[in-house]
Image 1 (cartoon, rainbow, N blue to C red):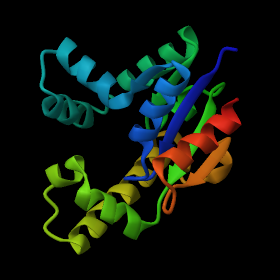
Image 2 (image 1 turned 30 degrees about the vertical axis):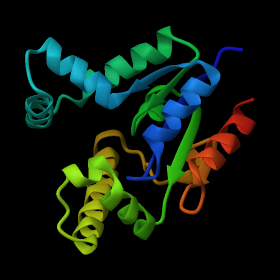
Image 3 (image 1 turned 180 degrees about the vertical axis):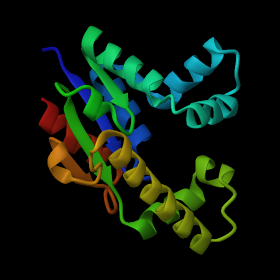
Image 4 (image 1 turned 90 degrees about the horizontal axis):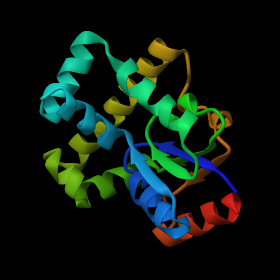
Length: 177
């Protein structure tokens, strides 16, 4: 069976961990928008930070969007971990993960990625995570006229707040199979 799976969701909901684990469990290729952006940065001779600034300053989201659509058109049997892959690969099985804000903050404070964000406190983490999500929702609504928080966009929505990684993976595999 040929299948395309896209996974998105809220900050610190477990998207990347789940996507990588699922791809290993069913032997699918794993793609991530972060990896894609790093590849495009290398192609342009830039660091990832320079590339992110360049994309923002020049409104070049379409570069990543086009590469995402190309993968969706040309490949099968993959998992794509990205905010908007579900939108650009409409024939995918679309998974959305969410987590309560206090759970997301606790995860952020423990994670390597969260530590690199240099949150001074749980309150600061909560404010910054909330604001980042607000900006994402607004930006994607402005750019694409879509509401990324609308559950009806997705085939499967899972609240990971009180679930283990294994439970989330099991629930997804059950639906995918």
